Length: 225
Ligand SMILES: C[S@@+](CC[C@H](N)C(=O)[O-])C[C@H]1O[C@@H](n2cnc3c(N)ncnc32)[C@H](O)[C@@H]1O
View 1 (spheres, protein in one colour):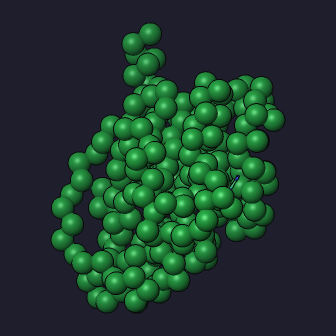
View 2 (cartoon, rainbow, N blue to C red; view 1 turned 135 degrees about the vertical axis):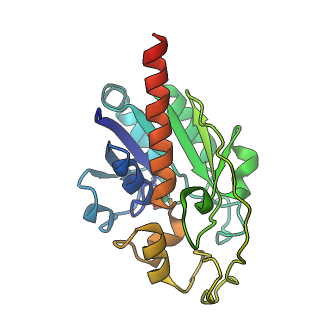
């Protein structure tokens, strides 16, 4: 399997990074905050503003990376703490603009509250990957390539009420000060993460799927050439 290089913008503790690593990518993470737990799974990390990082290192980025993942923090979704927009400007649009300048294929990931800001997003759910206690819908805009929409299995089990420990048979809601960090670690395979990282993260299985789909896209291009 050819080693591909990926830039993970807004990497946090590395939910996405872990999934891309499983799909055979060598990952470089960027986050505005120090992320000591990220360094437990990946040694290549830059502390920087993600959009500025792209413009500052454009030539190096174009020469180095095959693919870029970006998870700008949400501010519109009911799952997120509501924060004043003048303190936390919307980062989806400036991130997309910077990604387009690189010319490198990308995905932008976000939550349901940002759906109107994403172009033709694909929805992923834990049920698509055999996860036993997680729905966690997340949305992915693909740029410069096409990400197919997988079949979405029907939800049968209820979700735990927000802030309450999940009861037997309930699915986990990893938002806010949720209970059940150990359950999430086991279901997602994120044993290095704490609660702060988990509530921000995508399950690695989602990123692994995207990485594998991107590899299939490259294979199809090669066959067609
Ligand atoms: C939703 S989390 C990303 C989760 C990650 N994709 C995962 O799967 O674990 C968003 C991250 O963006 C970071 N962040 C916020 N503003 C940023 C900026 N301007 N530049 C870079 N990172 C930023 C936050 O520190 C946070 O770690």
